[in-house]
Image 1: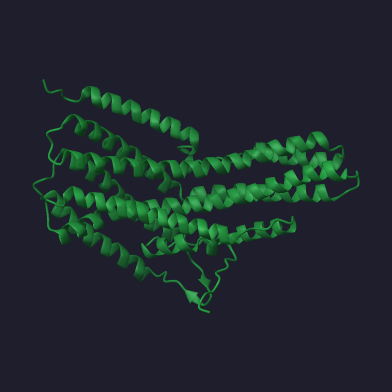
Image 2: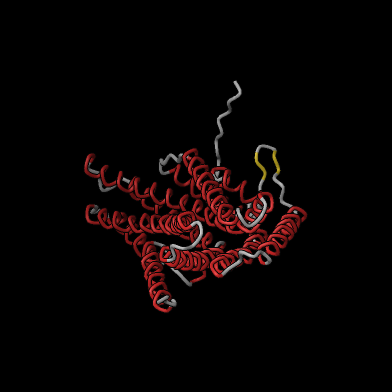
Length: 384
């Protein structure tokens, strides 16, 4: 009696769980009204969030810097946090600047969905909403875990309430930046789903050819291929627009992850050798937990990007198989046009033109990280 099924009608509504969290933490990229509920998106709220962050982080920074336990390993860690503290206001400002972009992306996505419906595709937006919910849960688990281990690290240096305020204030920019990354991943994954739907229809078309022996004058293949060509280009452009909106955030996130993983892995190596360190086992567990969570962030972002690009490439493989089986000149011409279109408009998740996200980026990332670690270990002082 009290249960009401939630049905999402567009891209924004399917991403509602993660969009709401972005809005709460000040990243006001969502701008629309749903079911008579107008979300708070005002300059006042934006300034209020910035002031709250500024005051809490200022207090926490003073408490940390003046603490007696503040040593080299902690200074490196807080330098990484400081980087995220600088990145977060930029993200909030960019969210405000690009507040209309998501609305435009949503409108264009609706047009794509209408064309997919004309092809006979059924989109399951409820599954997309469920994925966004899972992403939020993943973000909450990571945030709570990181905050917990950070509190364990400093629990002997300050009172519990000061420890709580300090950790949650200083770590908050790290979590907000990751939340923005997850919004990007959710948007890109939605594009991947639509690429996949196109490929499924093209595979059905190939199957239809085998089973029904299509006649030369049959217009259905031409219609489906023409729609596929239009939708494919639109999705590629949407991916480019999404990457442009989140470009600076992605670049800074990858740089921050590289710095954090390098320093944390080096600290893990040093701590493993220094068994006389107080709470040695606890420190090992805390640093390991940090490394695992940061690696999961890196892998998740790049895996989503790689899957989307691979789904885009799969279309090219399918249409070339179709070209070999169709004798109709108009069908072959449409296939060739789609093939040329893909060559001229390749899909690459290329934030600001600096890095290309995907599995190949991970190889270079970990290769460079290993190189820096080897150099750092070789230059480390050795106790004789």
